[in-house]
Image 1: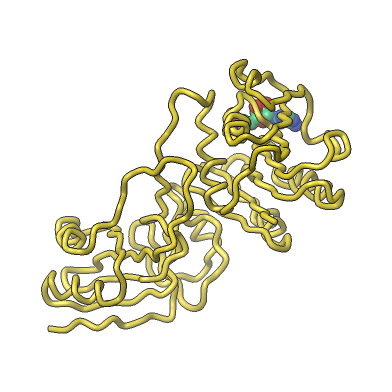
Image 2: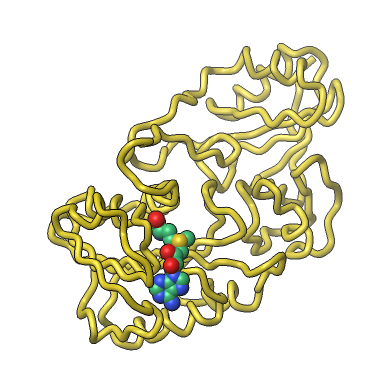
Length: 306
Ligand SMILES: C[S@@+](CC[C@H](N)C(=O)[O-])C[C@H]1O[C@@H](n2cnc3c(N)ncnc32)[C@H](O)[C@@H]1O
């Protein structure tokens, strides 16, 4: 039996782990929810709390596992399974599809260019899939070789992931501001790329990071510091814990000054709330993006790369 995909006028939104509630609040009317995958009718809607968006979802009725595999392979090479039910059958299909590399990569690396499709079984003979997805990693999982010795905190994973999505790295000789830097994971990552870093926190840096070449640490309130106090920066980074509107004010001051070029800032949600209004104001800054990274917890990442 030859299986043909039936494309849907909908998008499927795969929630960032643990944030299905926020995603459902953002989306409004939806059609169905399978595990953390939400199918919502119509064109793509702005949704921050996703790990992946299925941009061209289709239903595929199939007879045998071989039929499903042939139909998926006929659409494109790479498919990642999202097993929410019928785990064994999902695995049998996945095993017969071309191998998708899942080995963690060593930073720095580029975003994969090859499209990554995803599928899940709705029942034994029906599959929901999408060849086009927003995230090039299988189910949005950003895997890389971790450094468990160098950085003093695991927060470095966020800046590494943000830089891979930015498609640009701080270079030797570029100046970075790292606001809310202690104990120094981000400063370690930036200085490790050869950039010079002005690191600002109310607390001290880990001494090993403070001693890295190109690192200058200033103790104080990073949000009270004016752009003129530190001068032009190729990268303005913040991981400060503060209310999102406070971060936005600070970012706006930097943008008005014209002294900052690229920005990587964590928008940290306070308590259980999601400050959607402020996230939308960040997203409205021309040329910028608001993402939930694999290594973000109850926070979003704002990127402006110029
Ligand atoms: C999540 S931690 C940063 C972790 C850091 N990015 C790393 O990689 O190790 C947040 C930091 O923000 C600092 N912080 C909070 N408010 C601040 C402010 N107004 N000015 C400077 N630092 C602040 C805290 O002291 C804390 O070290």
